[in-house]
Image (cartoon, rainbow, N blue to C red; front, side, top):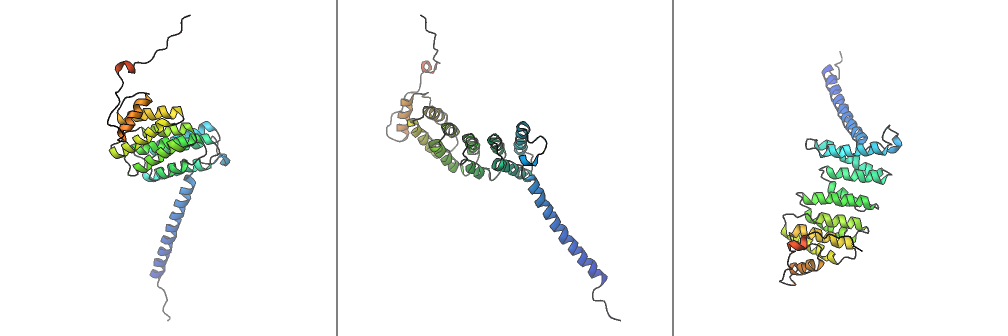
Length: 258
């Protein structure tokens, strides 16, 4: 009698191996499909009830930002939430929703957030760039090894952005004092250069930020600030006098009596 080539045990073993292989592939496929479906907020064209309403869509975007900001949110879930918001920013035809998405992303602690915000700084919409500047300001204030790079980006944006409101936002974010004397000095000198800016509101905001990071109180007296900057740069050893209590009193404009 001819001997069987394969015993029943071998057939069982082979079947189990094949099943496990297909099961593994199926799981991986399911994971990919799951991430694909959950990696974006349903597009306007999907006609999902409620999401064509700006109010409901805005609420959904904000909820995702709040959920991603929670300390107990798992890292994997944060990644998905961030991906959803990034996709909304990249694909939404509505600039208001795109800005909402940027504001929501800013709330989520995510590894690649800084890189995404740098990309957003190239956006044509000034309000969206402003949101990216504010998000970078939050990263800048926190513990971050790339802090100097962010400072350079904010300084460049404060100097060169074509929109004055974005420039003002960047100057304001630079006015957050950090425990790094060398970097603080670099920012102080950059803000000092902006005292000569042609845009008046940029000058005023530069003085506000200088007051915060230096602790000096020269108010809106540009001459005192200019002299202070000369001292910082080593051009003079003198420091201007800080404002007296009388100078700090608010100016009250009385109505003219005829």
